[in-house]
Length: 308
Image 1 (spheres, one colour):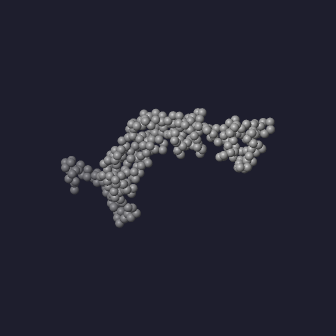
Image 2: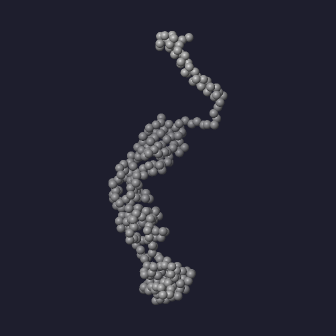
Image 3: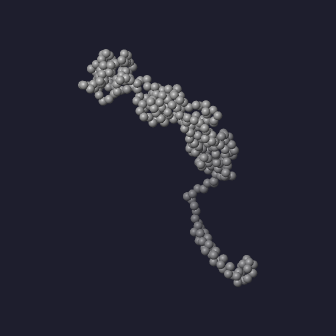
């Protein structure tokens, strides 16, 4: 029996029969595939998988401004108040005590024999208290033995040796040394006169020679942090005497579900997941337990681009 569709299409019986045969030949393999697939799946059950509905809410959160890390430059001068002072840490191999009684008129002898050097002690150049100090500005310690009034001494300089520095600590935070010359340091960090400065664990007195001008930040949206300030600005701010880095992506990558709330409702970490895409945050609901209507969040622009 001819297919009426082909008969009506060609109006010739012979051609209609040919079209019918060609169609049957092309579709028969697919029919066999379906029949075999149905037989293979008969009486089979899937019990090892659990299926959950797709959450359906997905939000892209894009800051209206970029986030800049501002690290100010500060120039300081080291005050070496203890330059030339040495502490006696041992006398004849033991810690000095009340029995240590040298003649202050005797010179300090460094070395022995013809190469020995003598250092006269200035008036008030010996302080027994609090820690047995000697003022010897002409002395440079080396491997030669040091003696005084027959006592063998072991000394250490009280002034910090300021060699080539890479890092110093300001208020407990490491700061990079950018340049150094004659006891003057330029560092990456905000230093005030009241700051606490240390090098190799030893407190160092200093004075601020040149500091960052905070007034340059008055017109900007900022937040203080350990390194300096976070600056929120769409364009790179024009600020001098500082290092300025765009940390937008890094800052967004540190966000978690706990950072978000909607009308005082804290988002459930079991219902939402946070990820980053370029300079945006994607907030996605992963199950139906907590559906919210997000419209506005301070300082952030929400764009709903998928979901129900």
